[in-house]
Amino acid sequence: MGTAMDRAELAGALIDSCPDGLLLVDHEGVIQLANPVTATMFGRSEDELVGSSIEELVPPEFRATHPQRRAAYTAAPSSRPMGTGLELFAQHSSGNMFPVEISLSPCTIDGMLFTIATVRDVSDRQESASQMAMLQDRERIARDLHDMVIQRLFAAGMNLQSVQSSAQPQMVADRIASTINELDDTIRELRAAIFRLGHHGERRTLSAQITELVHGRARHLGFEPVLRLAGDLDQLPDFIADQLVATVTEGLSNVVRHANATAAEIRIDYAGTTLSLLISDNGVGIPNTPKRSGGLSNMMWRAAELGGSCTVGPNDPAGTRLHWHVPA
Image (cartoon, rainbow, N blue to C red; front, side):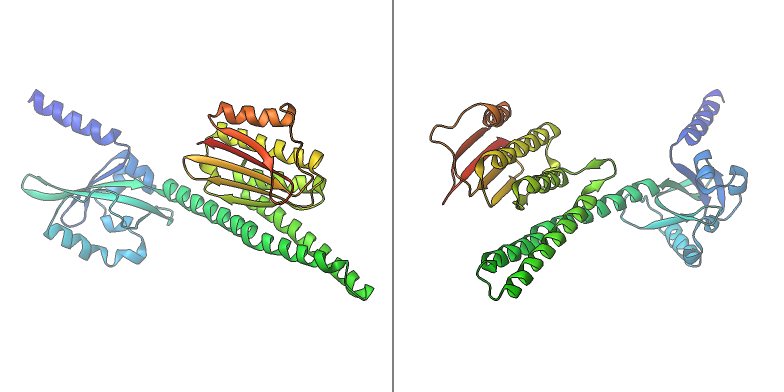
């Protein structure tokens, strides 16, 4: 008798302490037992749940077909684990629906068939998944805006600038100049939109940080550098991302101070195991024996610390080319 009582007490303790909702339902769909988590989940007391129909917990739009589904399960009962891919919903006493995962297990008590239903509220999980999908979509839109729209606008502006000086009469040249200014304004507005898309709460993505950095240096350069990003930079470890941002900052500062360039390109490739940064310009180039101090020394030191390398040499046909390459 004592052993049986101990088992009963243990079963009761397990049911009450289970982090998921637990229901014991008979073959007619009447709830025979409910644990405290179930009561909280559905906004009802345990006494209200026991003796009520399981259909009362099902949203109205699914309630009419639920008895047939329940009868089919009772006719051929089997264990059904959670995570089966079914989109299931339950209804709170307030009338609000919420997504759930449900596992079913048949059991026989005193010769009668019952079903144990384990219910898990997955509202937070679905909300997190939806939020992640939205952020990924925003990141894709920002990338598309930068890689396609802005680059095409920039190329159109460069083409107009190349014919502006030879345009005749003066009215045509003035109109071209006005169009170039409008394109520049449009690019700035798109850049601002990209920055907003890249701001995920309090934390900005790495690609958004670099985009903003390059755009900020455009004011000092007098032109908008071309930025090309390949790979999912946001998967980079923080310590590598910090060194990358510092190197891009130093490299562009060198272009501003020394290159006297009219065009520059920044290309960052992340292949999953390697990270490559190329900064090239069409400026005056570098001396035959460049100083290995200051900014250049800092960039080489950062690469060496990460087990990589940094080289600086002439660009083709003119200017300077910096290659910073590290394992990631």
